[in-house]
Image 1 (tube, one colour):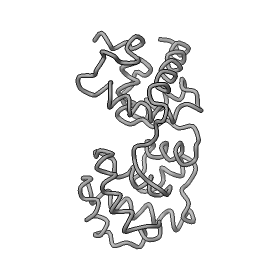
Image 2 (tube, rainbow, N blue to C red):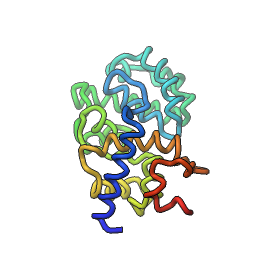
Image 3 (cartoon, helix red, strand yellow):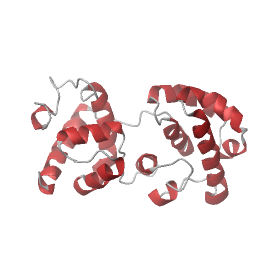
Amino acid sequence: MTVAQKKDLALQVIGRLEKQYPDAKCSLEYSQPHELLIATRLSAQCTDARVNIVTKELFAKFHTINEFADADIADIEEIVKPCGLYKTKAKSIKEMCIQLRDEHGGVLPDTLEGLTKLSGIGRKTANLIMGDIYHKPAVVTDTHCIRITGRLGLVKNKEPAKVEAELWKILPPDKSNDLCHRLVLFGREFCTARSPKCAGCPLGDICVSKSE
């Protein structure tokens, strides 16, 4: 498939998923920018549903970046324990908040380069912040995005950074972030990791993997 054909296919996918999920948004719950950063860090190898349960308690105890930066790490660990890898995640949360306080004046960086310098923050999380907080073009290559774009024939790779690079070449910048949110919903409803529900799938007639 040529780049031009992939761009055309991407537009078809975007159009159909916009109709299927018109109100798609991030499933992580937050009220302040730093809360989305922390919630996304906790979501590694953990469901969004569980993260939302944990962050309800976490954000009730620690309201600001400064409070997280000054917190006893054991208190953070105790709350985030249900998310798994809790020692590593708690360490990242405290360290990133110290960085935000001391190096950024309590404001999240608005570039991928700045965000990925924060403790524990990779390109996936950085892209989510760029799209949802700063409303800039973003490609969030989570497991749903990688699986679905691969099945559709839009990308050849499975490595997140390579998938992101391929998608930047074919997605309209103003549609990229919302598409990634819609792919999550589509992945949960139809294009599941195991036993995808191809019957009735809104993308069935344009999916190269349907017959596999």
